[in-house]
Image (tube, rainbow, N blue to C red; front, side, top):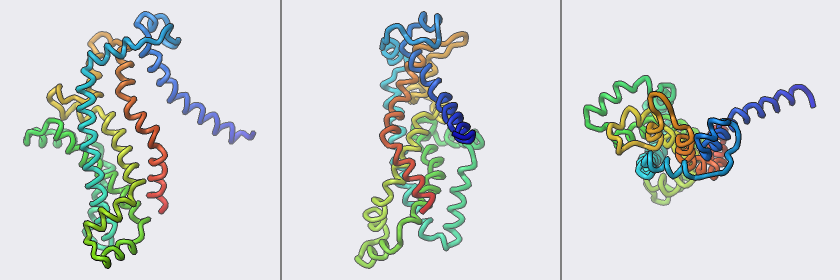
Length: 271
């Protein structure tokens, strides 16, 4: 084995440990008692108990936070897919026209503008129209996700031959029927990719809900983790148990659908 391969393997192992070690600490701490944690932070628990999880559910009002996160994520994803695919279709099929080329570059340029840059004026506008709530948060997610969605969908549309649309128009299908009944089903790999990428982002996002949601009854699961922080101390056992419960739904979704992310992005990049 040459030095180049050894370097690659060492890099992969180091990267894997950098990911797995914090996850290991989170899992074992979630099942420990505070006394066990004080004795050794790295050791396995003497017995795996779900007491921390039960107490964390009660302290964070987990059910309400889960429903808020589920509603915000679900509604956002539906509109992101509908708007992103339809807008991208219009742009992809009319890129020979100046207006559509300008719109494409407008959406792509949004990828380079972080939310923090526009946070203050956006919050002021939402406050002025009374939307510092779940609906205002959903609106922001849809708007910001369109930048990435349009970029990915437009690239994928280049792999779909125009002859399919021409044949559908000859058979009497209108533009809308052609798109929703013929073209949209062919977007499944990219649709799944866009959905998963945005589910991971929206479900785990902390900053937007923090600055948009005024009412604690609207808080998402990441915001609910505030309950474990105090001025002088933090209960790591309960906090890590709660963190695991927040992460598990999106981890399960990702593990089942990760192959669609790789396939969808690669198809959109090379076709």
